[in-house]
Length: 312
Ligand code: R5P
Image (cartoon, rainbow, N blue to C red; front, side, top):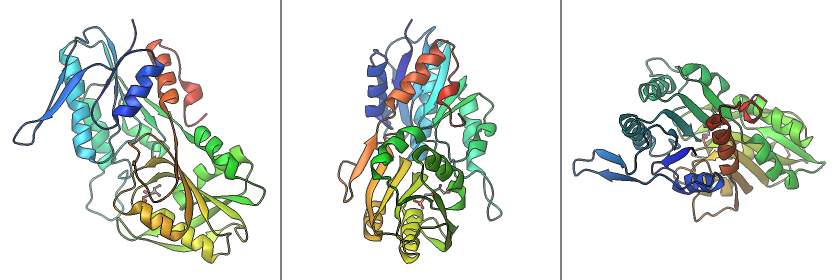
């Protein structure tokens, strides 16, 4: 029996591409809003006894996409699905993994609990904001990585005079991985977040003078982090123009415009989230449908997905 692929509204093209790879058709479903704003979902064919993979990134609007995922899971359970796997290419709330100021919620932990209530057997995620998030979940998590795919897309931009740059300390290990894959040295920008849309930079560690900078991060949201990093690299004497690679491109508000104004020349992101059709910047999109199809194929056959995971 083939796996069943079901999706909400968060990234239908990605789910379609995964289904094509697996030579199955997407499970038909309806998603609607009642007049009072409540979401209503219905799976249109029986999934009784099936191994169901629910593909839904929980990017903007994070709350609505999360609820859709949980409602679809509930519909499948009630219809007797044998096994349910949440395939969440981008996990919203992942950055809320600790209290930084005081009387805050730890959103990532709450989301993990909500997915547990959704009675998924397992979750698949791609480049989780922090590897330790895996431990928040009661269910097994398959933390995939798109870094090797993105590194290959970056390779044509990586020359002898290139340097991989982590735009903050949190991205230092990530930059190190790219550095090893591309044979480039690594530099780190020291950043402090001021608000949701503003950051400040204290300095740059590493040799960037005269070098072409390849900035890497797990995600771009408002663009504040990359903007500040690129400006700081310019001030530190780096060659003008940066190439930026990140797994998840949220591009909230005027992110793309602020990145272009700061001197970013090329963006490379995956299609974990729907890609903006129009952009003021060249964006290369690296597809991850093959990665997701591979992990689904293995999980469906009860085989290990170890070689696709972030730690490998
Ligand atoms: C921070 O820890 C993340 O890795 C990203 O650097 C950050 O969340 C990106 O957000 P923004 O684009 O709004 O600066």
